Amino acid sequence: MAEVTNEAELLKEKANKFFKEKDYENAIKYYTEALELNPSNAIYFSNRSLAYLRTECYGYALADATRALEVDKNYIKGYYRRATSNMALGKFKAALKDYETVVRVRPNDKDARMKYQECNKIVKQKAFERAIASDDKKKSVVDSLDIESMTIEDDYVGPKLEDGKVTLEFMKDMMDWFKDQKKLHRKCAYQILVQVKDVLSKLPSLVEITIKETEKITICGDTHGQYYDLLNIFELNGLPAENNPYLFNGDFVDRGSFSVEVILTLFGFKLLYPDHFYLLRGNHETDNMNQMYGFEGEVKAKYTAQMFQLFSEVFQWLPLAQCINNKVLVMHGGLFSEDGITLEDLRKIDRNRQPPDSGPMCDLLWSDPQPQNGRSISKRGVSCQFGPDVTQRFLEQNKLDYIVRSHEVKAEGYEVTHSGKCITVFSAPNYCDQMGNKGAYIHLRGSDLKPEFHQFTAVPHPNVKPMAYANTLMQLGMM
Image 1 (cartoon, rainbow, N blue to C red):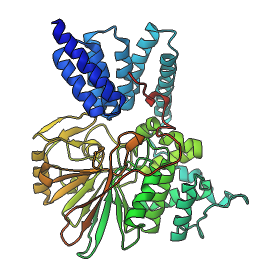
Image 2 (cartoon, rainbow, N blue to C red):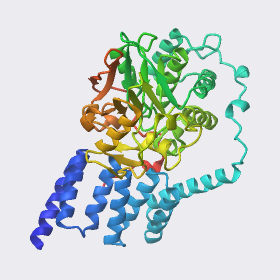
Image 3 (cartoon, rainbow, N blue to C red):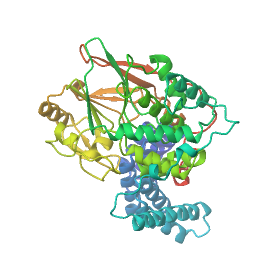
C-alpha cells in the first residue's frame, strides 16, 4: 500500500512540474494517473481541478473540486476550487456559499475575505438588476445618447469618421492609432456602435451566402482581444475588401487586454463592407463572460459603463450561424444536445437576448466535438459534447458537407475531426501569452469548398498582460 502511495506521489510531483511549465494537458494526464492509484486523495482532485480551470474545462473542474470535498469535507482548498469553477460558469450564488465556508474557517485569510466580498457584490448586483428589470422592452442606450452634441476636443488628433461614415482611410488610421496604444475618441466609438447595431439587427440569425467559383472567403476563429495578432492576420492575408471577404467566428473579446481595439476594428470593417465582412456571436459576446473575463472592465477603464451597456446590446444582434453555398455551416461552438435540429430551426431563433442555459442557441455558442460516438456531458459545464455519428446525422438531414467551428485552443491552430466533417479553427496564437499554440485561418474557394489551412505564430505586443481587466476572482493562484 505504501508503495502505491509513493508512486502516486511521484506522479503528482511530475504533474506539478508540468503545471508550472504551463503544460496543462500533461499535468492533467499525470494527476489522472495518480488518482487511478490513489482515488482517495483530495489534493490530487484539487490540483487536477485547477489544471482543468486553466484549460477552460469548467465542468470538469467543478466535478473534481466536488470530489475533493467528498473525499475530505475539511479540505479548504476544495471549497476555493469549487467556488472558482462556479464563478467561471457564472454561478455566483453557488460560489458565494463556498467562499462563505472558507471565510468562516479562515477568518484571517485576506484573500478569501476579498473574494467573498467581491462575489457577494456580484450576487447583490444581479439581484438588483432582476428587481428593476421590467416586462417592458428595456430602453436602448441609443435612446439616451446625444452623439451629435458630443464635442471632439481640439487637442484630439486621432482618426475621425468622415461625415459620420467609416471609410477605408479611417480604418487604416484607426488601426495605426490603436497600434500605438491610443484611444479612439468616444464620439467615434459611439458612432460605430450605433451604426453597427442597426446593420446587425437587420440580419437573420442564420446568415446564408454564396461565393462564386472564382471567389474565396477567409474564416478566422477566436481572437480574444489579441489585437496585434489580428493586425498580423490582415498583414498576412490582406485587408478586408469586397474581393477579400472575411468571416470572424466569435469570441472577439475577453482575456486579451486589447479587446476594445479588436472589436472596434471588426465593427468598423462590418460597416465598411456589410456584404463582404461577417461576424458571428461567440459564447464570450455575453454579459456573464464579459463581467468575469475582462471586457466589461476594459470598456469601463477606457470609456464608460454606459458604453459597455451599448456593446451588450450590439452583441445580442450578432448572428449565430452562417451557411456558405448551402454546403458548409459555420458556428462558434458546435452541434446540438438533441437530434432533428434543422437549418429552418436556426433561422427561427430569437437571438436578441442573453443566451439561455440550454437549447439550440446555447449549443451553437458552447458545445464541443468528442472522438467517440454519441453525446456526453460538457467538459465546460454548459451544453454538451457530440460525436462523429451526431455530426453525420445532422449533415445528412440538412444536406451539408461539413461544419466549421472555433471555441477551443488547438496546438496547430486548427483540427480536423469526425472524418473531415468537423473542423475547428482558432486564431489567437500563444493564447493568453501562455499556451504556445499556433493560430490559423481557413480559405474556402467557391469552386470546391475544400478548406485550405494557413498557420501563423504570435507577434510581440505591448507589455499589458492578458486578463489585466478581468474580475479579481478570475486571477487564479497556483497550487
